[in-house]
Length: 234
Image (tube, rainbow, N blue to C red):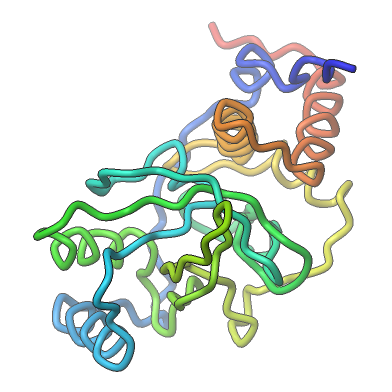
């Protein structure tokens, strides 16, 4: 039976769309310097740099906005990992007054996503950009690690950015209705949580990947937005 259309439409996303001023990090937060990024990347690669091509496992925004050069894309499944809105944020798609939630790759279940093979000869440059995109505060909330991803008959070793349970803004096990409510209400200087969810679900569906967790969330978010009173934007 064909699946029902996506309930979270661009029109509903637009109803809660807004850009909030970036308040920056709070004074106690230490951020990566250029030297820190380079040291972190070299330390990550030193003990485990593969001789074969380098792959990145994309499960969320890297699917619809990768930001790095890649020459091949495959579907793959990471066993023992799952998508989870488990990172509370006060920047990007949230504020200090209304924290948001970002999706991470967390322990448990399985996750189907896309394997992206880096362009040969420029891998280090592409990883430098990826490190800056995925990490900013120290220690990072998104921890890069090598994971095994099954793609057809092959098992491919790939870099994935994963949840860091040691961070104080890691919040796993939130009920779906609480996640949905937060995605409706929160926005930051990158836009709203609803927009992020919409882009992710639609990109996955275009790739032939159906995630029941995200599908349920988009239905709940759509229902909540549709119930909001009309907003006069004039």
